Image 1 (tube, rainbow, N blue to C red):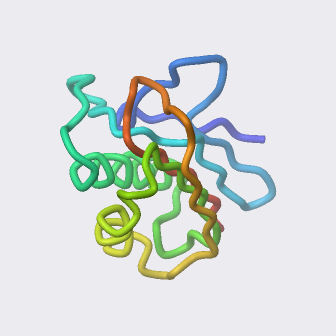
Image 2 (spheres, one colour):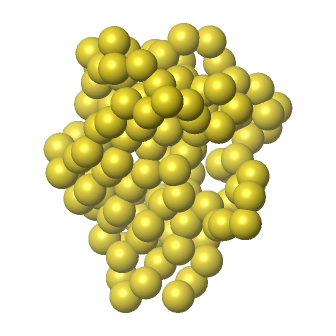
Length: 122
């Protein structure tokens, strides 16, 4: 197992890594919309989805892969009413249309509105 680490995505806020590679597959940890340079969180679901997608992309890039190779995502929303706005941003990044689960959860770390994790081929 190879641990993936990059300064272009937020550092882990617990006892886990940003991602790992096992047997040619890359697993990202859930990426919340924290700007890795400033630690700030943008306002609104569209901006937060953009930041979360950017963070996923940074972990994928650090692992030597890209959005084009993602075949499964899991998405967490604080409010399912944000589903359409979330999808409008998500579809710009995950153009390969990977399999996906999207669920509403009671709360997310730091009070954010969304979190995205991905599995990709190397």
